[in-house]
Length: 153
Image 1 (tube, rainbow, N blue to C red):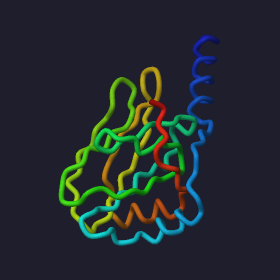
Image 2: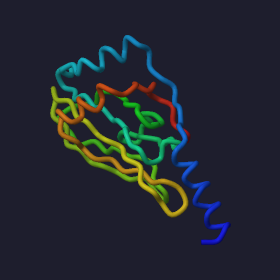
Image 3: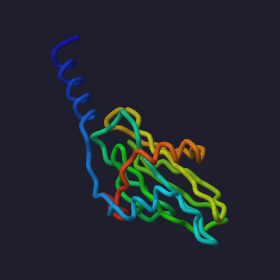
Image 4: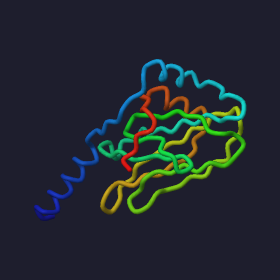
C-alpha cells in the first residue's frame, strides 16, 4: 500500500471512531422514559436509539412522518409518542437519500427502533430496524436521552 492510501484509511478511521454529541434531555424526563410507561389511550410510545461501534463521530437526523425527532449520536435514545392504530414513517439520513421504515403502530404499545450506522462510499450511512421490546428495553436502559426537535436541516 502506498502512503496516500494509508493516510486516507487513517483519516477515515479517525473520523468514524471519534464521538459526536447532541443536546441531552433533563434528568426527570430521562428517568420517566426509562420506566417504559404504558402510552396514553390512542397513542403508541416510540423509542429510537443508537448504540453502535461504527460511526461514533457521525450525527444523523431522524424524522417521524416528516417531522424532526432529533439528531442522533452514539449511545443516545429519543422517546416520543405518536397516534396509535396507524402507520408511521420513520426516516434517517443515509449517504445518498433518506432511509425509511414504515411501522404500523397499535395504541397502548411501545416500539423500539434501532438506528445503525454502516460504512459508505463517501460517508457513513444509516438505517432503521424495529427490535423486540425486551431487546429495546435492555439497550435503552444503558443509554442517555437526547433532546427532541433539533435536526441539521
